[in-house]
Every structure is written in structure tokens, then in C-alpha cells.
Image 1 (cartoon, rainbow, N blue to C red):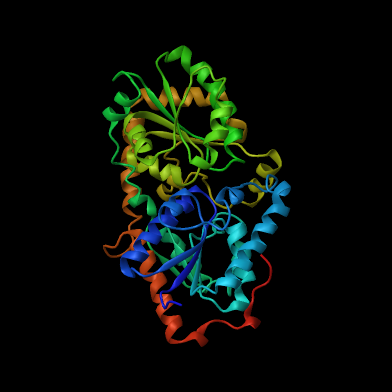
Image 2: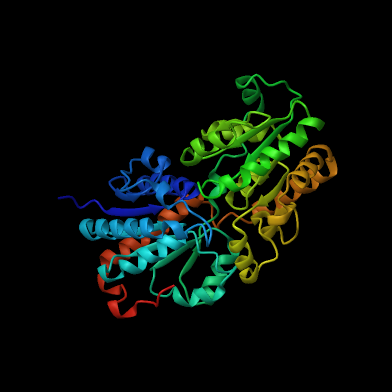
Length: 402
């Protein structure tokens, strides 16, 4: 037996895996004897986690896309609950993946184990009414965006802004010359970053239109070099999908090489999400594009309550970068946008100035790095539980199904 605390972690996608690995490092820095169990990807595995099952089993997005996977996701949920019941960890931390995480948090409520949700469900963007179902799901919510703290506190939830992890990503530290030397590229070859997403269910929707776009771009920019940074989870999917492209892309799975590619890039096309903030930190002019199942899109359009999809636009409170979504996610429009991003100095300067402004607002109060701030909040909850285990809600306080 050991008195060392055990924290059970769940990450459901590539960005959560990165957050989880940094959180594990930060927790160990503050409490060296801490132990971990749960579900994560390659980054958390490198940090010492033995994953209960492959994280890729949870990396699904879309209202329609998830339907064929409901049964397997249900089995994985049962496995996770059984694992927590058997281990009885001192605390459970769920990272992103709200569709899975919130169900897990509800299922383990009777165990009276402190629970933390790291990364808020984006109910401020759509289906805000769901926030009424959150009380009782966790003891603490750690949020990444400054306005989220006020939003959730307004609804009576204990939310803490810990800063955005992109600030620790080192996305702005890449070496352009190293990338060009490594791949034998001339100094003048235009590098285009293509980021189709980290989930196996989303990348196949963007890759065909990216391939068709490159046919058009090749005519105007014969030396163009497409680079696709992806997580190892979808690397094979991307290789197969791009095998017949007219321009063979460079597929990058290693973080340092991805940042080197950012430094060498003239422009980027990316799905919405954390990738926009990484590119902003690196100062890469970009456009956001996305395509999902038409039924999913139709439902989403009725529910979304924010004016923009791109995180950089939401934070800037204006259309800082173009958004080419659904019907506008076409090869000709994407090619035209890329040419403009690569050749218009005023557009480039406008975006970079906007990026610098919005990134300053992502620092949490104080000087702690985001992962360190999150670790402090988690350990504070852990200490409070040890001092007063009766402080957790009773079984009768469970919220209704979300």
C-alpha cells in the first residue's frame, strides 16, 4: 500500500492528450510522488500513463458521425467506470471530450470521488440551456478562455480561468531553415500548412477538397509545398487519403517538426479549434475551413449562438481570418484564399497584429504557466477533500441526463 495520491485522467482527443501530459508534469513538479491511471494518447503515455484503452476510440466528432459508434463508446464508458470503481482514485480529471467525459462524471458520482473537468464544454456557443444540467457533475471546472469563467460563474458553477495551454505550446519557436534543409526545399518554395483535424471522423472530409485545391494552386504556384501536421492517431488515414494527390504532401507527426513547418510557412488552411491559436502564436496567416455531414451542419446552424466559428475570430470579436465553411469549403474558393494570404502583405500584417492582441488575453492572472495553474487548482481540491471528505455532494444531488 502507498499513501501517494492517485489521479485518474481521461483525454479523448489529441489536444487533450497534450494538455494531459503537461498537467501530469506540472502535478509531479508540485507533488513528486503522485500516481496516474486512466485513458490518454501518446503524449500522456510518454509521461508515464498506461492507458486503459486506446484514446483513438473516443476521437469522434459530429452529431451524425457518432451514431455508428454509440455501442462501442458505451462499452468504453462501462470499462472506464469499472476501472475507477476498482482503483478508487483520490481524484478524477476529465479533459475535453464532453460527450464522453460528462457521462463518465455522472456515472461515478455515487463513488464520492472529487471530480475536475479541464476544458469547459462550449455551451456558450450553442445549446446554452445544457448548462442547467451541469451542477453536481464536478467539484471544479478549469476553463481556458477568460470569458468562460464569468459565464459559468453566472450559472452558479465553480469555474477557474487557468490560462490557455497554447501559451506553452512553443508553436512560435520553430526553425524555418532547419525545416527547409531537412526536406530539401529551396528558400523560395512557398510552404502551405494544411490542418484537416485530429479525429479520424473529420480529416477525411477536408482532405479531398484540399487535394482538389492543390490541383488549382499548382498551376499558379508550381513550387508549392503542402505540409500536413497531424497526430499519430490519424497519420495512416492521412497517408492513404493523400496517396494520389497531384502534389505529395509532407506529413508531420512530431511536434518540433510541426513548429519548424509553421516557421517556414507562408499561409495555412485549418479546421476550427486549438490549431487556429497555435498558428496565431506562430504568426502564420490563415483561413479556417470545415466540412461536416450536411445533417450535422443543418442542426448546428440552428443551434449556434456565436457569430464566428474560428476561435481567433471569437477572441478578436471580428472576422480576423476568413471562414470557409460547408458550401464555401470548395477547391476554387480555398485556392483563391490561399493565393491572397500568400501575396497580400497588408492582409498578412493585419492578421499578425490581431493575433498578437488576442494572445495577450489568454494569460491567467499571476505568473504561473497554464498547466501549473491547473495543477495548483487540482491539488487544492485534493487537499480539501482529504481535510473534509464529507464536503462532496451526496448521491441525491445528481443532475438529470445531459
